[in-house]
Image 1 (cartoon, rainbow, N blue to C red):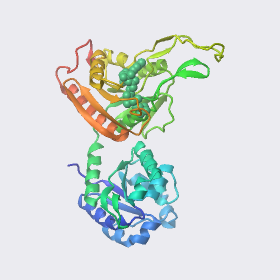
Image 2: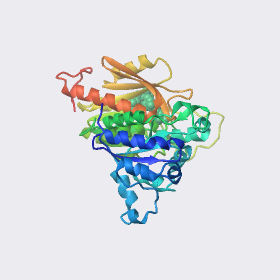
Image 3: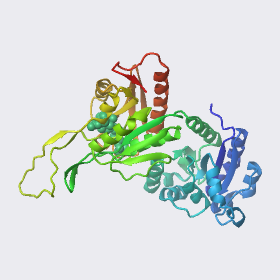
Image 4: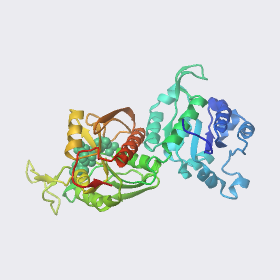
Length: 416
Ligand code: PMT
């Protein structure tokens, strides 16, 4: 069980009835060795007196962005930087909406925009509010940014109805924080990780291109999870509109050839390469200089092979620990294992795509294969999936580094 000893936890309390469980949560966190500072919204302060939180946390409680005493020294910035983790319990539907929109309407919203610490939400609301499409969408946006959720649980609610929406119990929230402390304990500390993400675009003429449905969400989640695990991460991104994860260096490219060039130019210093990008396999042989006109009923495009970034990385004499993805519409295991062996990979993450799966969603499921092993990861957010993948990579990477003989198919050269 990971320790919360010495961890600095910023607890945001918002205006749900479950705020009454907050003092118990603070007490449990302090019993586990954490320092806790509490920020309350105006609504929360109507439900539980701030002095209660002050008494149990042993720290002054902040309720107002306009607190002149604290803000003389830019208190909200200092508070946001102080935290190792920010927990909001209970997190109301209104709070989730504000966070999803990036509102800095009060002290808590402002802190959440400033902090680079992981954000954990324990939602609490009426079950109809939890099921509302707006809340579902906000949940997806936040999960897609790497926010962790604990609960909500199902059961009797304060309003007298029953359903999903009860705040997770304080003990469960503490366990989730212990898990987070363990995950962030530097699994990849001291490593350099190169990740590719998103689609590539292969131009046909100045206005058209051949591409695919990749949004980059999976690769960006892997980059974020690797950075959280302590790695120095470089992300080579195809044309996507996603924000760069905190602490990650980003290089934007458009075509497969550019991605190949960017990856091969940087891979020499990487310990681990993760190819999550959906790199085009083919590109138009000839790119028209001017926009092609509708002069006939049919148009034939001649396509030629693009370079295979992953295969070329894995074939290097001093190849990094090389991880590929397999995006398949059928025979998932057979195709993934064929790619693992043919491309001499250390690991492959197989996922089903097409029919609304895999591409451009906030969730996914996958089976991870390596020589002599596999692990199924069921449907979950891409952020959580990425964390599980990174944990497996860390385990396999250290196993291959400490092994006297390589575990993967022999080829010329060694492993970095
Ligand atoms: O981006 P999202 O919308 O979040 O969707 C995620 C995803 C479905 C794109 C992702 O999970 C995924 O499966 N990525 C790999 C997509 C792919 O190109 O799969 P593939 O089976 O065609 O390729 C196998 C491997 O070779 C991949 O690691 C790919 O990066 C690599 N490859 C392929 C072709 C090529 N020219 N160069 C490569 O490096």
